[in-house]
Image (cartoon, protein in one colour):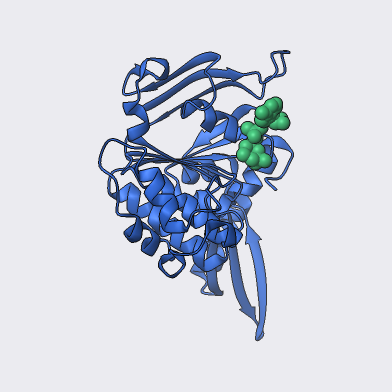
Amino acid sequence: MIEVRDVYHDYEGKGAYAVQGVSFTIPDGAIFGFLGPSGAGKSTVQGIMTGLLRLQKGSVRYDGSDIGSMGRSFFQRIGVSFEHPNLYGKLTGYENLKYFAGLFQGPTEDPMQLLDMVGLADAAKRRASAYSKGMKQRLVFARALINKPSILFLDEPTSGLDPATAERIKALILEKRDAGCTVFLTTHNMLDADRLCDTVAFLNSGRIVAMDSPRELKLAYGSRSVKVETRVDGRIETHTLFPAREEDRNQLSQLISSGTAETVHSQEATLEEIFIKLTGRGLG
Ligand SMILES: Nc1ncnc2c1ncn2[C@@H]1O[C@H](COP(=O)(O)OP(=O)(O)OP(=O)(O)O)[C@@H](O)[C@H]1O
Ligand SMILES: [Mg+2]
């Protein structure tokens, strides 16, 4: 279990907090999504949780142990992909993974197998500097898995990828979760968050403004509606009804019981709509 409590971070020591009072818990084997617009503080929180940034205020605990008290073995347990690919351009894809594998004392994955998994087997012998942006990103993702981590930190793992490659990465994230990994996922993409995450936290200007499962967030903040199509004299009419309103509920049951309803679709609010409602701004 990961417990983050009341974390603050001030990069310049001038009282301008990039994150403030951030608290959440991630149970083992869960995918936790951190959602928010650019500059919200997502990467800052990941930096603190992975020991890249010094913890200034608050606490970060892994299975009850403070991050400050954990030795090098901590780095054996975590896999991290950064938002800016940090690869060795002069080394090939294979050599990059081989090099990073050598930094770990514990068991590591076979680089070739990882390259194959992310669709880079054919590019294994090419220099990373000659990789496209999406290829670099896949290599960074593979690198995060090299030390067989039980906790994965993924900063925007699908941004800038074509839909098919993004799907592949998402499927791999779910596979890792199913194999017991805990995942901290940072994203702008509310559809990814909705599909992948057990819990989502909305971050805005350094603060968590809402946190729950995507389903609960939609139930709590979104207004569900029902779209009913009826056929009257051969013409299709569309009615949008809100079950929260009594008159709409009555109309809905009347349309269904009279048999005039041809199709009935319940429509959920999207996470993006809820985020805009809560913060007055989009996720872009
Ligand atoms: N090294 C740094 N020095 C000073 N300020 C920084 C530094 N890194 C980030 N910040 C500031 O901290 C705030 C949060 O930045 P952060 O990178 O955590 O946001 P983010 O949510 O990851 O954004 P994005 O979606 O663009 O990646 C921003 O106001 C940013 O300008
Ligand atoms: Mg970021």
